Length: 186
Image 1 (cartoon, helix red, strand yellow):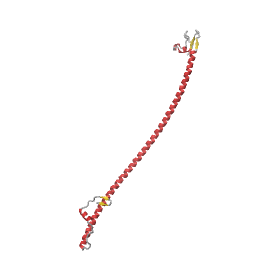
Image 2 (cartoon, one colour):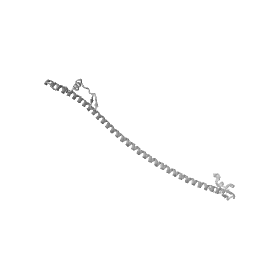
Image 3 (cartoon, helix red, strand yellow):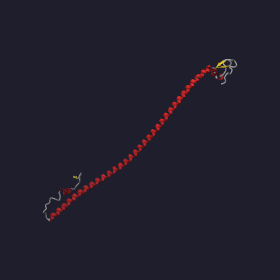
Image 4 (cartoon, rainbow, N blue to C red):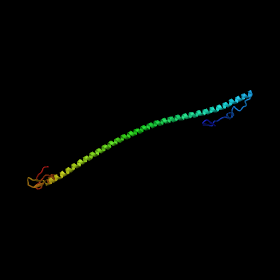
């Protein structure tokens, strides 16, 4: 049966159906006293049947309202839980962003240190290379100078080349090539 906006099936007894389908109207107006009391009892029983139908429908609607309120309460609790979870996830996300930024800044500082160290090493390498070149060129002129120098032996009067005096074996270092006398002290 359709009641208002709801379409529900209401279980009625056969007596309720017969009372509610026939109404209190339809009786002749010119009745005697006994007939009036039977009409009144029929009217009251019809009203009782209609009342039962409405009471049953009211109980059904109250049950639906309670179920809807229970569902709304469950949804409200679920929304609160989800909001709490969302806040926790947002806080975790922000802490991860902060950690990422901190690590990025550390990495940037380390890269700057590495670049500075590389530049310092390159500068030191350039200075050392230049110094080595200077030493190499001065050593080349010094060795040319030493190879052309001669030392006179005071004993035999032989001129000994300085490179040969310096290059002799350890036990013969600084000795004359002819007389084996010590010419140069090392």
